[in-house]
Image (cartoon, rainbow, N blue to C red; front, side, top):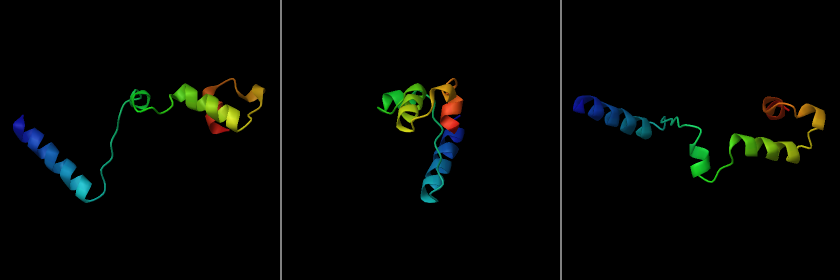
Length: 65
């Protein structure tokens, strides 16, 4: 177990040195970081882009507008 841990730490350090580290985090991270949730972001886009009401039936349609 400790060997796997040490290997993981080494790989993370190497990725940082090579500027190739990518973090994958869960959806809840945005709320804890004072970033908008998906719904809040979609509503903001809808208002900012003046998307016609008939095109706002789906959050995915708004995101693709």
